[in-house]
Amino acid sequence: MAITVTREAVKRTAAVSSNAYDAQIDALIADLAPVIEYTLSSDALADSTVEPVLRRGATEIVAGEFLAQRLRAEGATEAFEAGGVHVGEAPQSHADLGDPYRLIERGWARLTPFLKPVYAQSNTRDRERQVSEQAISGW
Image (cartoon, rainbow, N blue to C red; front, side, top):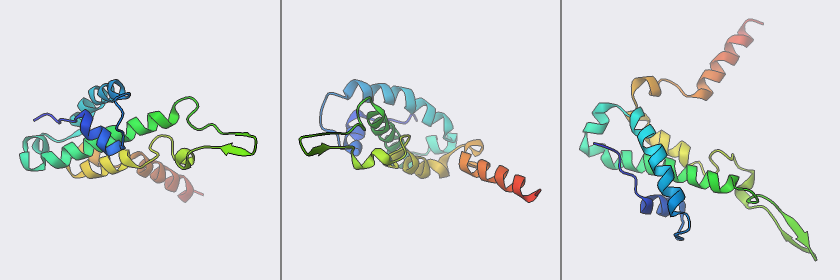
């Protein structure tokens, strides 16, 4: 089974009602869905009972990347003041620009039980922590 991520589901997850971003969302789905599917075990892909979980996780990842791209767009986090009126940054502008709403993280967490073993072993943060702990223990 292939993972199916729809534009409507991504827009609903990202709280977008405008059609202005349809092409961008479609491009992200085309780019990310095969990558996400590749990381999943064949058993998970063959099991129709977990299909809704896989679809939801993939949708959250795509929606999170869409929102991150919008926040990284030129001018998205600029502020100015004119005549005593301050037009400033969005509250999430100080968030992690790679995943400002934690949707990508939540999507991968949802998919973790279904990943191929090589992808489920550890994440980058774990590897960095292990290297740091090893370096410190020799002091």
